[in-house]
Length: 183
Image 1 (tube, rainbow, N blue to C red):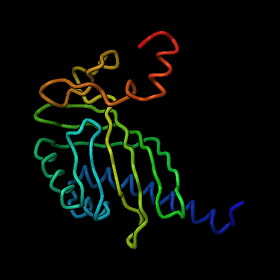
Image 2: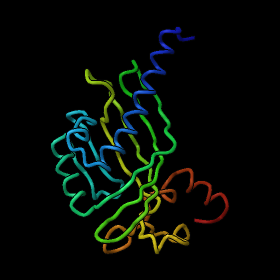
Image 3: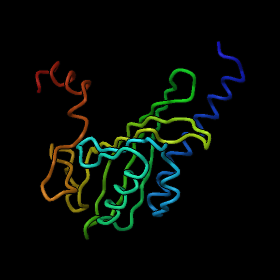
């Protein structure tokens, strides 16, 4: 059994990672450029499952955000569930975060349901994102929201609709559907 000190250190690390995830939402929505930069390690990776976003290094990440902000107006990100798993000596952890966003994109009110696959690293400045991959369940204009979960092409943020990133691509989803003769 871990010592009390180790258990407290783990709880403190988890609380700091949760704060990091919350700070991400506020800094993105507020366009706090210095705050966003401070969230990532120097060698961090930020990408989207569909490959549209793919930046390595904090300077490339900031350039990528600049491009994203060029088409985004006001928005509000909400994070819901956070799963954190610590690896090795406790200086790195992985996480999955579920959330949604309300966004003004290219002159249209949109909503998105999303998940992040994260790697967190403890640095001299505290916990930061070492890697962050965004996955979309849907990203859709508000007027197309009703019934959106019945369509496979739920990413409608671009000129041509694209397939959703999950759940249909997940091994557990595929196995479940195959076991029932679907898919």
